[in-house]
Amino acid sequence: MKKCLITGVNGFVGRHLLQYFDMLETDITEILGVDYSPETAAFTHQRQPFSYRFEQVDLTEPEPFTSLANDFDPDWLIHLAAESSVAASWRDPDRCMTNNWNMTYNTVRFLKLRPIQYQPKCRMLAVGSSEVYGYRENWEEPLEESQQRRPYNPYAASRVHQEDWIQLNVKWHKLNIVSTRSFNHTGPGQSDRFVVPSFIRQLLEAKKNGQKTVHLKTGDVRLIRDFSDVRDVVRAYHLLLEHGQSGEVYNVCRGEGISLLNIIEILAEMLKLDVTIEIDETLRRRGEPPIVIGNPEKIFRATGWKSQVPLEQTLKEMIQKQLKGTSKNPLVII
Image 1 (cartoon, rainbow, N blue to C red):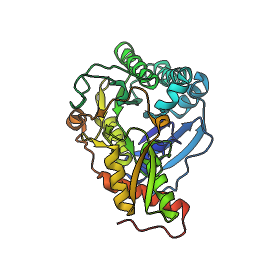
Image 2: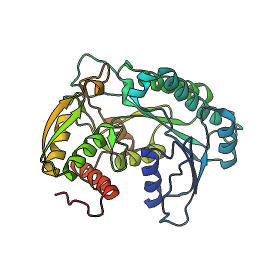
Image 3: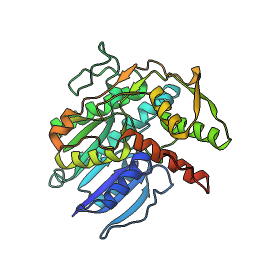
């Protein structure tokens, strides 16, 4: 029977990961979730035996986390916690770099300082980002793990530091850590600080106001990105814990690109709206690559994982989720 510690548990992915483990027929029986936010990621347990508890911990401080983790003695550690907004990293690069470094350092430190007889027991999954790839000459070529990293924003640079620190500790301290480069993912419950939920919120507001034509404020809608459903992503994380090779990094992606404009068109069709685009220069991010598509071949070879949830299904469920929270009589999306 396994015990699993999850950092950043109150975030978007953390909440879906809890639900996934609760529904899955797995040998995980006890989960400890930690987060800086005091808002507990509450959910109703469906499976027995299964226990979950939450502790508010500042991961940028080493001792509270180390003490808590040692007492819990996890078999698996999933490190989700991060300052993950690219836009925020430009506004306050010191905060992004310092916090992401400290959270990664202290998580790895827990593994490194354990008594030697316990070190091999705990296996860690360190979630990273495709942002580390940055610029390249051939934009249309799918990104592979062997390609050179060229970070182009503070958040991406912080993720490069994460990867390098983990590799160093795997090599010299024989820690058992698998890493990801996760591409764009979305799904029900994601904050509208992110692009797809932002589109949905604006379109639903127009729909509820009786508008037939919507003027949508956006950044550059020509950007092409590789979107997966968050529920596919958490399944990938579980499979990498089971089958990934320590010291390796794996793309987590669908392997297909779609433009933001195309996503808007799909949403408009679902909601029966005519949409005109209004470019808001304040929503453009510096140095955005025009195309980001990953190659998922490595994770498929290691685990058999591939993205399964169609994007249209994800978008439909995101619409219904937002409607459920704002209306007693949700619209039916066809």
